[in-house]
Image (cartoon, rainbow, N blue to C red; front, side, top):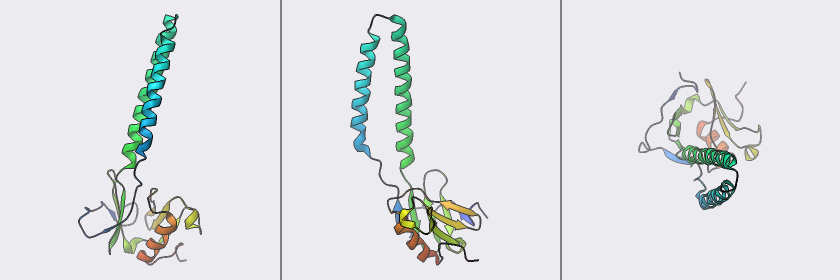
Length: 164
């Protein structure tokens, strides 16, 4: 048994499972704004560095360079992390397909499905799937928990709480 009941690696997309939800696409409309701001910051950094103080020029260029590298790395990580998560259901299992650590939970191992705000799936940010091995927290998807919780409860034949 795995961490979340009988959990295995997720299968491929051509095995008959239907895609229920996926991660929302990255907001790439902000990239031109980020590029403009980087150019603007570079312009003013160069203007400040072109001043009379030689030592201040080196410090300003080093700090600006480090900030620019940190910004590029942060943007690259953010865009890479957001892509590619798909939640699939078939008759026997729920699969969370992603690049790193895909997860599959068999239907019979699901004990309860709820949002992270008890009793209020429409207020929730994440869907929690409880199994004998623990709780699987689904990432934010394009379908809100108010839609996914009832769908997954009906699919698994479970309630919000584990029966006592």
